[in-house]
Length: 231
Image (tube, rainbow, N blue to C red; front, side, top):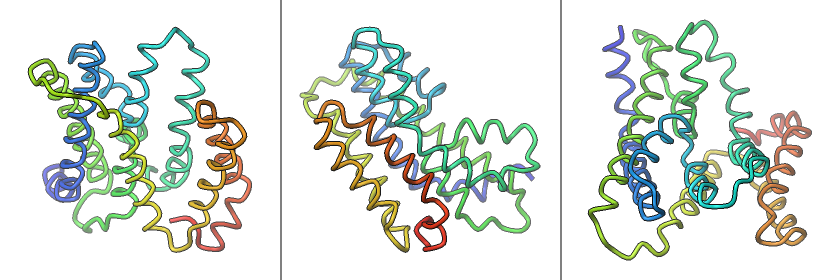
């Protein structure tokens, strides 16, 4: 049963492998050139497993100690998982201990596969989702660890490497935009970002933007769902 679920899950994760290894290695190298050994990206990838948050964590670790700001930033960056979790409530029912790992290991890519994949009837749904999540995390952890190790061996100009995080956000946004039949949520996010950018400036608009998006999508969730605005 487990082997059958693994064989069914693995092909769905192959495109994720290519992306996660590249981004993971970039993250590991970025950590290394920022003064951290390979142990940091390896452990952070295992315990945090949030690509965008892990990139931001590099600047948090090198900045003055600010626990409240770190907590708020962490919650805002990962706030989209609130909606992921709500969407997966029914799918995670009756999965026993696997449910807790699926909740912990949920990321954009694992959510997309587990939510939309057509699982064969002879494959256990819980084990399929488990292996999708486990494989995706393995790709990220191995990539970031390898990047941390290679960072001390490879010497090149790393200026602009941190732009990988920006590129990742753009890709995630475009993927979700293409999946939506109607782009209400994309318009909400874009408008909130532009308005908060004008009101709070380039250095302080991220947290207000995430708060506005979270509030607006919470208030208008039902009308947007009825209009076909959510995936």
